[in-house]
Figure (cartoon, rainbow, N blue to C red):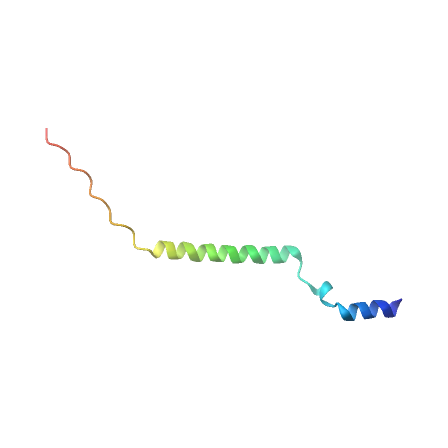
Length: 60
């Protein structure tokens, strides 16, 4: 039985060495955060539209 376990471990060693689901999810969230910050930086660099002049008031 021990030899069977040894063979199974040699065939699939990556199953135990795989990343934890939580760490993968945190990495995914970090990537999303980075993309969002990059998009906000690009948005702030865009030239703002020209401001409209205030309407003139009629003289009384």
